Amino acid sequence: MTLERLLLLSFVVFSIGLYGVLARRHVIALLLSIELMFNAVNLAILSVAWAHGWLTGVILVLFGIAVTVAEVAVGLSLFLLAERVRGTTAADDLSTLEG
Amino acid sequence: MSDLAFWILAVLLVAFAIGVVTARSLWRAAYSLAGALVTTAVLYLVLSSPLLAAVQLLLYTGGVLTLVVYALVVTASTDAGASPWRRPGAALVLSLLVLAVLATVAVRTGSVEHAAGTPGLGDGESAGVELFTRYLVPFELLSVLLLGAIFGALAIARREGSS
Image (cartoon, rainbow over all chains, first blue to last red; front, side, top):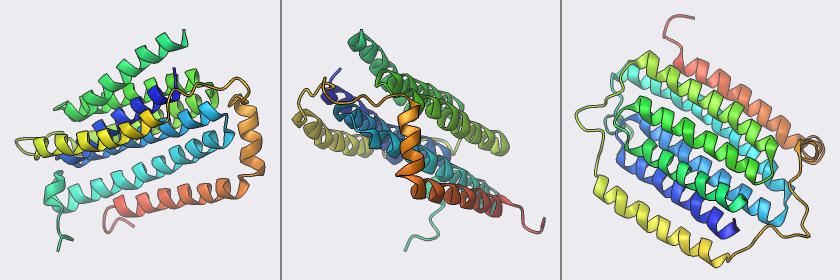
């Protein structure tokens, strides 16, 4: 187990999540894919911290996880609001703010 | 031993990740995400940080998945339109391009092992001491952020006129 392989693994997961964000239509599917990308980033940070023995990396990932949970709470409430007001769950239909 | 564990976990993680983005049913996507998050937690254990593994299981897998499943139950609309996809070909090309760029970065790091002289990430104790001494202010700011997120979520999702 080397840093190179760990980083490659997290980058592969990140790209899979990116594909999901670009290709899925349902808002919750987008949110799940973003979670996947976030998870990959956390894994990359911890891999570097592990390879160099940096305790700060652990703290950083800890903060990252907490911020993600806050983001999911707000994102899901926005989704519930959009579903109730606009009656749609597809990201393409929520384009009022597009120019 | 650690190599074998890594390969098993890597295959599991990638399989779950593909499951998240390809599953037609949002329920299966959510369960795949749960699998991916638990696999990552085990990987954190292998990377010698049990504190993060516990936080990942409790907060991330428990909290986030509960929220997502709750939203799926409330809206009961797990199918958006006829096709769940939009431009999958372009998305595939773009994500493969990003992966190629990232992979060159990863390859350039070379085969750095966990160096023998460097200190381990240790148990939760050292991380806790750091958290409550050096990183006390960010920690407290984080609690304010979480409180704000809770109030914000309540204010957004509340029905009109039910004050």
